[in-house]
Image (cartoon, rainbow, N blue to C red; front, side):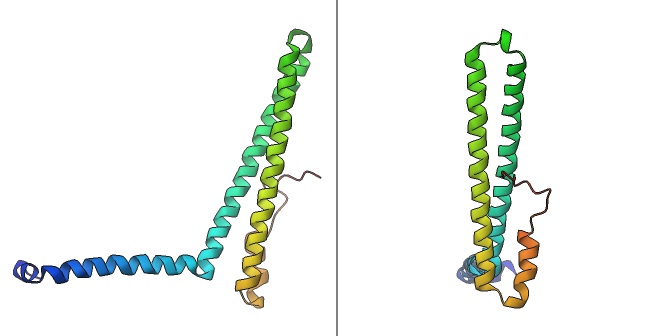
Length: 143
């Protein structure tokens, strides 16, 4: 292309740039609304929930260690501090329970999408890939 061509057809150049941007936008929207796009979004949300459980478990471990340390030094520690540490352990346990519940909800959403949108011959493979929880999983077993 020459500069002369661009000067004479500037509107065509601008329109082609805008059309390309609109086409990319439409393609991204179509992908997000597709089965694969929805599954990807739900799986990312599930992974975020797993990380939240790991953070909650770490917080519970830290609060429990602090409480144990304060109980060991009970004669020299104010009772109020031991009480507050006990309450923080209870709060951390509630947060962990809440995070585990959120994981169960996210797993249900992924499972439901797989059942609704994918053919039966692919469902088991997708469930194994995205919902197979191994013993080292960050989801805490509270039973």
